[in-house]
Structure formats: structure tokens, C-alpha cells
Amino acid sequence: MENGGHATIPLLDEERAENFSNRENSNINGGCITHSDSSSITIVLIFSVAVVFCGSFTFGCVLGYSSPAESGIMDDLGLSAAEYSVFSSIMTLGATISGVVSGKTADVISPRGSMWLSEVFCSVGWLAIVFAQSSWCLDLGRLVNGLGVGLISYTAPMYISEITPKNVRGAFASAHMLVLCCGFAMTFMLGNIVSWRILALIGTVPCILHILCMFFIPESPRWLAKAGRGKDLEVALQRLRGENTDISQESAEIRDYTEICQRLSATKFLDLFQQKYAYSLIVGVGLMLLQQLAGSNAISCYASSIFELANFSSTFGTTTIALIQIPAVVIGVLLADRSGRRPLLIVSAIGMCLSCVIVGIAFLLEDLDEWKEITPIMILIGIVGYSAIYSVGFRGLPWVIISEIYPVNIKGVGGSLATFAVWFSSTIVIYAFNFMIDWNPAGTFFLFAIFSGATVVFTAILVPETKGRTLEEIQASMT
Image 1 (tube, rainbow, N blue to C red):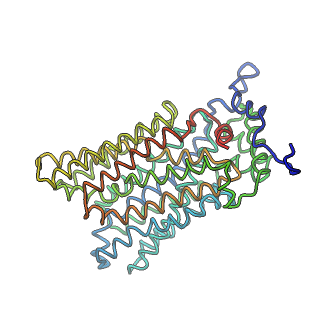
Image 2 (tube, rainbow, N blue to C red):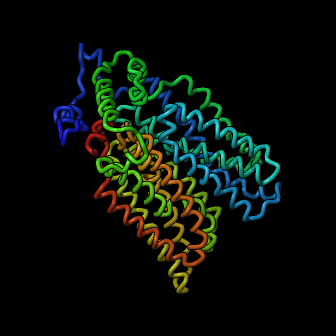
Image 3 (cartoon, one colour):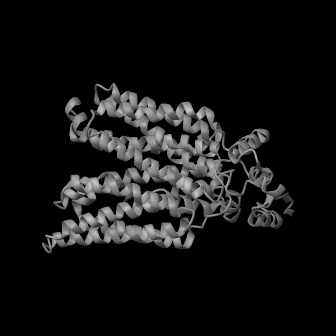
């Protein structure tokens, strides 16, 4: 169509949009060949996702390392509390740096290549920690660990969402966070029985396993389509869906939608701020910012200090949190493709809000010198409840959603911006938390409750339901 003498291309014409929305699963040849829109869970698909989970496990090991290693590192290398605080927080800085380019890196060298690079960073970081004899080498290793985490945090759920069928995509992508929690818990427990150097050496095992196994999994079909490698796309899709699956329909959808998106505009950063991408941008960045402003990482990092401030056993409290997170994430994985993403996010945010209110009231009562015999129990209930309900929904689902909503032509820059937003805001909140809790513990948690409440409203009004829809259908509806 012509507009002022310039040809414009609609993102999806009505006929194509209807095709994306209404294609149904079907069987041909007496059921011997099935369309790939059906539940095509193959050995290759399971193996590919399992390989990616090695990166998820590494992610958890990196996050869980600083707490159990604290006393050993400070004693062996003579670090002060301030120096160890730098070591603990510098990983987030590294993740912020690599988060800026995480999406673009996946665009240029492919999601598989980006994951491979992230594990190289993590391996180098772990080895620098193993052989560290001074604080600068220790900090360098932790920073490089963060560079790897920044890449894997976006690329792993994105790759999983791009290779899995729509009816199981949410469960597989959410399981990324379950494996992350397992890595976190294992590191926490092993840290009580092995030295910090051995613990860092153990951290290299999933890295090496991931690096080696990456050579045996297919590339993302959607990245291959964007790279113009149509033949490789069909080979990869056939491997993922099985030899007896008709991939022609899914392959055509991927090719058509990728071609349309690539004809729209180049993937420059400023293109992300065009009006047609505003909805995707607001949802992706908004979810990530609210996840951190609601206190998620700050509460996880300083749970021990919170329990001590409440005159409650930090060992019992933190152990309870570690134990409850894994079953909570399992519940989230099971519900992701049944109840849907949006209801799960809303319930999770409501629970986070109520938990913060409970903790805020408990600290307020302590300040008023009232009910001091029950306020520690209230704080335990609030913090453990927050960790559990956060793990059910908001821990992993925002990553699933940002891997689903960005069209192919802006997925790189959109993913980079969302990843930068989560790690940068995490750095700010974690750094400010100590000052806030010293200033007013009750006020801190009431502030987190306000942001959690804002998250409920934001999700209810703006976040779309992506359950049971192809990536092309989701992206077409948002642009």
C-alpha cells in the first residue's frame, strides 16, 4: 500500500494474522505423521533442554557461592567486611555489563554460541577464584562470573522458548529456574563441608559439561531463519520434532514471520522505541524492574541479616528458605502451562505484597515495643512466605515472557535492554538495602509491599497471556 508516496509494509495482513491465530493441530496418513504444533516431545528436544540446564545450574552455583564461602575467604585472604562486600556485589556489576549486549550477542553469534561464551566466562571466573591469592584476583574472577551470568540469564530461557512446542514451552522455560535453585541449594550445602577453593572448582564441572555438550544440540530454528539458513532451519526443526512429524506448517510460519519482521526495519537500538514496539518494551522492562523493586534479590541476599535483626535464628531461617524454594518452583513449573502465565504472576505478586506487609507490621510492632514474643515468628512467616510465593511465579516467569514477546527483528536489542534493567536495578536495590534497613526496617518492607501491589496492577492491566500460543501469534498481537 502507498502512503504519501512511500511504500509501507503491514506487520501482518488480516489473512496472515488469521492463519497464525487459527491453525489447529491435525494428523495425516492415519496418524503416522503429525504436525509439529502438537506435543512433539522428542529425545533430541529433551537432550537439548537438559544441556541448557547445565547453564542454569551454573547460574545457581554462581548466585549461591558468596554466602557459604564468606568465612573461609575472609580468614584465608584476610579480607575486611567491606572488601568482601565488594566481592559479593561485583558479580551483579558483571551481569549488568554483559546484560547490555546479551540479546545482541545472541543475534550475532546465535543463542547456542552465546551460551557457549557464557560458560567460557564462568569457567575462567571460577578458576581465577580457585587460584586467587589476593582480593583483586578474587574480585576479577567474580566479575567474570557475572559476565557469564548476564549472558545465560537471558539466552537460556530464550533458546528453550524457541525450540519447544507451544503447549509445553512455559513448563520447560520455567524449569530453567528450578534447576537454578538446585544449583543454588547444592552450593549452599557443599559450602558447609568443603573449602571455598574446592567449592569454586566444583563450580567448573557444569560449565565444562555444558561447553562439551553444546556441540551436539541443534541451533534455534528461529535464529537460523533470521540468518537466512532455510535448509538448516528445516534440519534443526525436524531433529527437534522427530522424523515422523510434518514440520512444513511450523517451518512456513517461522519463515514468513521472520521475513516480514526483517523487512520492517534494521535492528538498531533506537528502533526499539518506535510506537509499534512500545507495548512489548513496556511489558518486558516493566516486569524486570518491578521484580527487583519489590525486593526479591535484596531479601534473598540479606535474609540472614533480616533474621538477626528480628532476633531469630538466621541458620534456621535461611535453611527453611533454601528448602522451600525448590518445591515452590516445581509448583510454578507445573502450573505455567495449565493456569497460564498471567494468573500465576498476579497470585505471586499478591502473595509478595501480603508477605511484605506482615514483615513490615512485625518490625513496626518491635519499634513500638509491642508483642515482641511473636514478632520474630511473624518475620519468619513473612520472609519464608515471600520466598515461596515469589518462587512460584515471579522468580522465573518474567524471563519466560520476555523470551516470548519481542519480534524477531528487535529480539536482540529488546532482550538486552530487559536484561540490563533487571541487573542494574538489582545492583541499586541490593546496595541501598543496608542503608534502608538501618534507617527504618518497617518502612523498607512497606515500600516493597507498595511495589508488589503496583506489580499486581501492572500485570493485570498490561501483561498478555502467552499460554498455548506460538511465538509468532504472541508477537503479532503485540505490534
